[in-house]
Length: 437
Image (cartoon, rainbow, N blue to C red):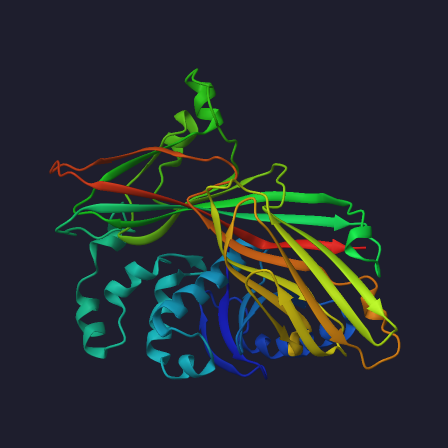
């Protein structure tokens, strides 16, 4: 990856702040960015990479800003975009909200950050916690910090400071899995519930997981995490019981990758506080944890009744919290009336949705909601080929994949005792979509 310069622009293309790292691209080239972008929008072929002569513009939009990197080399685009999104993350950590006003109010800090985040077009220190040790928003601290660079910048362990002390040593582990399910329904419209022969099939499904830590440990501890990883069990000849096969595994920089590749041990010195240790994907067939059926019944072209049935398809000991079923309705619907066997339904006219909220949904239970609307128009074609019904939820103490934290070993030279705590959470991911045809 090699970046010539980074620009922060407002929505009119005005440069708010920039940093020239290499000097091999004329800084005036940025004047071509917005015209190129507007032309792409008019043509309906909006591209994440724009080209003017030999100069490439790689850009993202955040709030009322454009963040643009320029280069005239054959740079790795994915790394450039990773850096731009990291910029957003760091600036947000500093200013709470990244927008035009926060940039204008913090020019000095932004320049300091741009200098530390990248050097001669290559990323350097990008951890906001480490940056905050020596780049602050008080000018006096900036002068003091320049005279002494924190050891975290020069250390082999750049993500953790030395001398951390806690009265009570603990580490909290959250295993969070998000489920993405697409269900396709072939179902007739305009019939009574009793006459429906529901035919729903899962078109695609996967599980996206992450393991997050909140570390409150003194000193420089080494942690070793054990999971019921199928590859590990096969290597050690213990392929018994429930195991999982993880794909697309990504680790925090603290994890010793060579150790994981050789014997699947997750060994690391953790960052202090909150961090995401790893993420993974499990490509497996997953049935919807909350099964949705829907029927529309029209009456004399002037009113419509939508019936939605939700059934919990997870174990009875578990409870889904904050379940939200979002049902699209025609844009000209009015006079809403609702009747739900549990929870609360409301009409959101600006989004053409009925939102059915159930605070507590036990496994194995089944609930019904009826929504009645008047339709001002005589005919309404929006009932045909409806947008999908989406479902959001969260189930604590439960994972669909069956992943388990088998052990967490904490090793520190002082020999203190520490308590690891583990929590499992399953939630809806990029939405459970129920498409009715």
